[in-house]
Length: 380
Image (cartoon, rainbow, N blue to C red; front, side):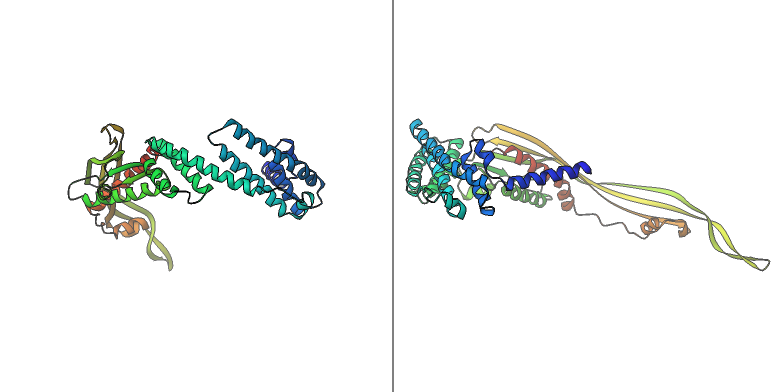
C-alpha cells in the first residue's frame, strides 16, 4: 500500500510538472515549436515567469527558421508530397501567431508575430492540384490497394480546397473501387428449420455490417447484389449447416431413501410430567430429469469470386442442452429438505419448440462466425 501511494504521488507530481512546463526542456531538445506552445501556456497562468519569457523570446525565431528550412528542403528535393509539407509548416506557424495574439504577455514579448495567410492559401491550392493528380493516377491503376491510396489523396484535396473540381465524386468513386465486395450466401436447411436459419443469417449480416462501418469492406446479401446488378464481387462467404440434430431426448431417474432421526413428533406424560416424544421420519424420494440436446456444425468458406478458389474454411460447432427436473415421494414429507419439497411440487416444464432449440445451439456458432469473419477481414 505504501509503494502504491508513493507511485501515485510521483504520478501527480509528474502531471503537475508537465502542466507547469516552462518549455525549457523542449527548447533544449530542439523542438522549438513545442517550446513556444508550452511557454505561452505557462505565461497565460504566470505572466511573470522569467524562464517562460526567455524560452519564448529565443524559441519563436528558431521555430520560424526551422519551418522555413523544412519548406525549402521540400521544394529543393521535389518530393511527391512537397506541398503537403508546405501546408503543414505554414499551419503550424499560423497557429503559433494565433497563440501569441491570444496571450497578453506573449504579445508584449513578440508584438508582431508573422502570419502566413497568403502563403498557406497558395500552398493549399498547390497541394490540392498535386494530390488530385496523384489520386487520378492511383485510381487508374485499377487495384484495390491503389484505389485506397487514391481515396486518401482525394480526401486531402477536399481538405485543402473544399469542393475542388469534381473531388466529391472522385472520393465516392475511389471508395467504391477501394472496397472489397463480399456476398454472404444464406445457409439453407430443410423447411422445418429454415426460419431459424434465416434468423441466424440476418443477425450475422447485421453484426458484421456494423463492424465494417468506415472500413474498406462491404457485405452484401444475394438479394442486395441482385438489386445492384453486381457483376464483379470479389469474394463469397458460403454458409452451410453440414450436420445437425435437434431434439435428442434423454430421461433419467434416481430413487433415494431420506431419513431424519430424533424428530419431535409429539409429547407424552410420565408421572405427571410432560416429555417430548421422538421418532425417526422416513420418505422414499424419486427425482426425474429430462434432457433435450441439440447441436450441429456450420461450415464457413471464403471463396475468391474470380476463380472459385477456396481462400479459407472453418467448421464451427455449437451445442445446447435443455433440461427440466421434478420429483415425487412416498412417506413423511418432514424427512425432505425444502429444496426436495419444491421439486416434488414442481411439474415437468414444457419443452421448447424445435425452432427454438435450433436457434439456441446456433448461438455459440454465431459468436464464432462473427469473430472469424472480423479476423479474416481485419486488414481492410
